[in-house]
Length: 320
Image (cartoon, rainbow, N blue to C red):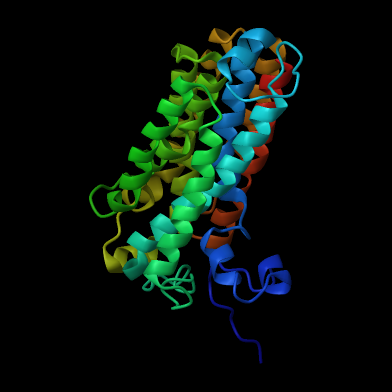
């Protein structure tokens, strides 16, 4: 007789279970290293911003803004050192953010089917162990940030505010996704600052577009937990919108595309960027048009498809 498998975000057959040493597995799961979508979502605004900022900056200006030694980059192309630095930074800071989120949400996670097997509510890690791991990851991120110019370092430090407050917002507002957007898209400001040593209107519009994008994809994600969230009193845009989710997705995603387009125009990107952005808009339209909000597996699949959206926008910015 077949037995139904529990709905969980801990993959039983992932690479952590197969290859990682047993002692490290809870820490790797705490950092969500077996679920890279969160790292991609944190990284994309950084890489988009790097590509846009580099399009109008000479290689000399970019080198002056970046205080660290970097590879030679062709004018108009993002610096490979900065791309790598932001990639590592996104990986470790996403892990630190997940640890912080799980520490603050430990009591709630134990009551939600999808999250009750996470390392803290399941008892695999103590609060102290999780906090120590979070500090270690944050120090690695700080080490990367210290290699940027002074203005970028200041922008990076300011990013801690939305990261710290985000986990508490689901207790206060029906729109915690807004605060996730504030935190997850900060790289749009930081990437530009790392290249230019300043903030202009283009990265601000890119940041605003990223927040609208996050409102869309995280509302989709939140529909996975809406039943349990209602039982334990957790608020979310998914619960607030209910059956109105689809038309609001069109609004969120449409706003994101418009704002990204304006940011690219101000950054001096050419027609290839607009062509790529049109293709990216089709990907978002597919999400909004085909989503089944009552099917958790479909919600997760649509949410994960934003990795492809990120690649399309990045390619558009580079070749634009």
